Image (cartoon, rainbow, N blue to C red; front, side, top):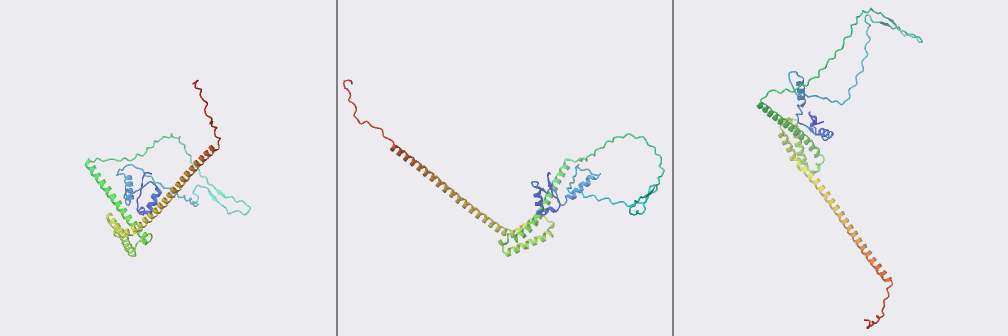
Length: 319
């Protein structure tokens, strides 16, 4: 599936369009054609393709129907007919009594059959089937100036179609926004506006709805945009109060979370400092203990004897 094009008025409903878009996934719904005239244009193309007086570009149509075929009705029994001349006649007697077999009686008249002469079998000849030729697009002889004129006309038609689509979308958005405002006024916005504000909003929404289904059924895109701005004059102040409250709540939650994270960080740093201090104290204690043990070992070891006698006299003559 390469592209998905929607036609008709059903997909103007936002909920239906969103549901189909969710089903399609990453395939976006396109609206490059006039949704109201697409079916009629397709019928014209089909008629032109079937007409012998016009020539169109060759294309194929594929109809996909995933529904199971309906069951075929059972054939009705044929009524009994009277036997024709030359066919066997059957006379059925009344049923036999109990214990006796009943046999139908048949009177068969066999007419004489005429003799038929059998002709010798003719050899079969193979007939080659010709494949249907596809219709080809025949380009007429146009001057460059005419071709450029047609291109400009095509561009203008495309611009008009785009404007028609934009106008239709603006109308759908306005209608959806009116219902959205009415729903929010009785729900999430209820505590953020005064009674007078909601009364004015209800009045403008009612007037817009009546206008949409009356004079506003077929107007320009700018008219729909103007009506949208007229509703937002009354709805935006109420909506902004709700947005401000939600933003303040989110900021408060973020502040509480930041303070909690800072407290946890300080506690972790304090625990790390205490652990480092305890490790240094344990290391100092071990060093002191090792020094005390070395001093004690040195005190307990025997001292070497020292010779305090004077040295022997030196013989002067030998010297």
